[in-house]
Amino acid sequence: MSATAGDAAQKGVGSRLGLKPDMVVQELGWDEDVDEDLRSAIEELTGSALVDDEHGDVVDGVLLWWREDDGDLVDGLVDALTDLADGGVIWLLTPKVGREGHVDPADVADAAPTAGLATTSSLAIGSAWSATKLVAPKSQQRR
Image (cartoon, rainbow, N blue to C red; front, side, top):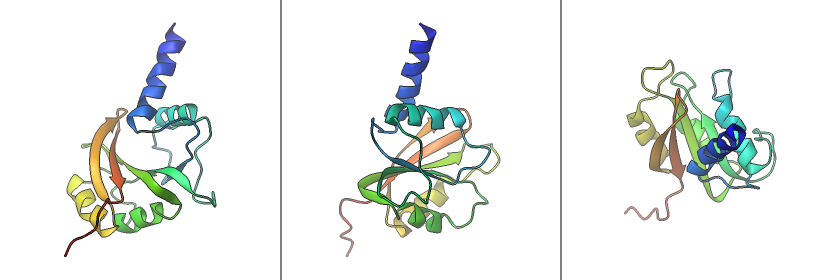
């Protein structure tokens, strides 16, 4: 029974991110500090391995692992848009408050619109990471 509960928990994490079977998810910013359980849960739910920036085709979603010292966040977000399908989602994964590499939410709020994205929600993922959902705005009519 515990295997079933574990499977349900894994699918729950991916579902909380809005992921579904057969989706192609690109992973950017991988390093040794990423949450391997989250990666495994996403692969389990989608039924395929995460792809990298050399995938060469459109993707349904992007996981962007980002730390304070990773460079310019706007550039990172723009790069994450390269292979993203229309209607796709970028999940910006940043270390939680108090963790090495923490990114101030105000920095995310400033960078997103500059990259042409809107912040829609945030949630805790695992013990060390927070996830912020970024999407292309439905309307960019600011005049």
